[in-house]
Length: 209
Image (cartoon, rainbow, N blue to C red):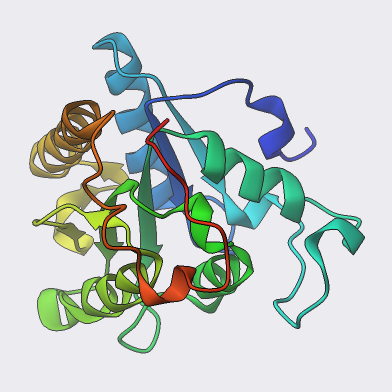
């Protein structure tokens, strides 16, 4: 079966979930996929973009329009979502390079003023703040509205690769809270005023989708 691409996603969704991993689908993919399904059953539209199934360009300054791959569609998917969940395994105490590369490719308006939730997973709790701390710094550059509490999962949250009740509950709560926060801020200027320094070179957006 060919990998899914953002082009298969149509219209706006409540949550666009990005899994920043280039390895074959594993425990975190399974946990997020389950959360997406449960969110949909609860009336929150969500979909999953697994970077391991996508062909993205390298952030070397090449214009997005000149890239003959999934980059433009992936960025369009981020831009059209009402809110975003960024999920990453912990590599070297920080988010994956593949997720950072996507963020480097993403223009400021695609995330400016948008509610973003964070999910990270490591082998133990030793690096539980690694990805969260880095992502909060980067998302501040975009002027995103980051959820105050992130979800961190470790190996003990899974049995034979299947997420346990604690993992499912934590993800469900984050998905619901992120969607609710986005709905509550819709039509307001929260996250847009003042404009982040990263938006100085682009025309600021004037409203929340």
